Length: 447
Image 1 (cartoon, rainbow, N blue to C red):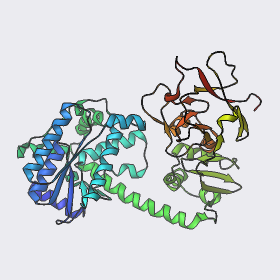
Image 2: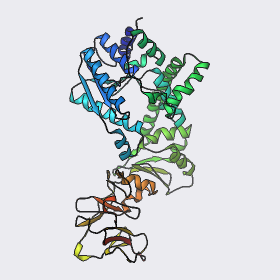
Image 3: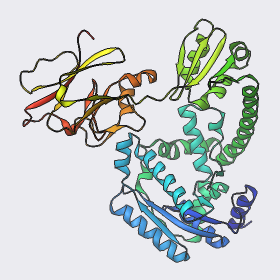
Image 4: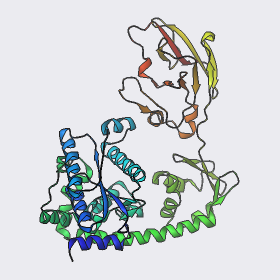
């Protein structure tokens, strides 16, 4: 069977798309995506080429973009490109460069698909990529779903090169004499995936040359097992999760305790709500003697209550505002049962109570407000160049989810966050040698 015939058969067998449908190809310029483009052209599919320039490799990144642009001209298909400030995005969102690039890439491709009315986006993952993904999942810890590998189709993303191993892709590329761009970072083992590809897989192939085939067959079995497990879990939820009028869900502890193996069942029942394996392990070890104990995920809580397990969503932090009138300083107020004061003073010689927060009193936009944390809140902490999510700061300070609303935020009339008491102030209102008057935000000793 010709290479392109195997390619087209895989697309048909997995119902990736119909011949007349329009597909955007995500092409980096590397060997995998270049071969995918050549196969689409040979099969005479209706396609366009899209390229993301992450601006991580200087001139090389720009040359990659120009190479892919020329590739699209060669095939006489539409070309789309975008440039990202990837490092800035990663810094501001406190994620790795790799995760930032992934998020930016998929978000842009989906927006492009919708805007230009394409049916699907094709990415060039092959069987060896899927093997690497399974091994990474095993190293991180995973449920059954993590053993399935990369799916040929998910929503509007299709992966037609999963018909082939990485070695088959490389051999076909040489056979076709196709030019491509090489990313030198692929040779670095500082990234986990590269270390698996370069160091681990060669040793595994010494034990079994048909590594990709074995993992592919295993993935199909795990996929079937995962569908069976999902069906059983859904049926248990339908029979035992009792939804109350107020939105809470109650389930009998006796029903949960009868499940076997209980650890697997509890994980599958509750991890879709964001509960970690560690938290669910604590739940199991506590349910015989932990009435009243709570277990938290990012959005939900589980409460042990006299033979029942009650799950409810965590209420979003309320937007509590107390207006601070400038001509009434000092201003004392109560916040969740604690007494605070906001006052002004001279920079030198001012007496302070516990945990004072001080900012430049001149650099303020009046009036001021005190309010709770809100989803999406960001500010520039003292000494940092970029912005930080307030939620990340609260996590670092080990503030429980149920206590986030109790942390007072000082904001100006434009809702710019000036201080998160008592940990950080905004760099833009820091005290400088030129500062004469300061605004002091502190908790009263007898509060």
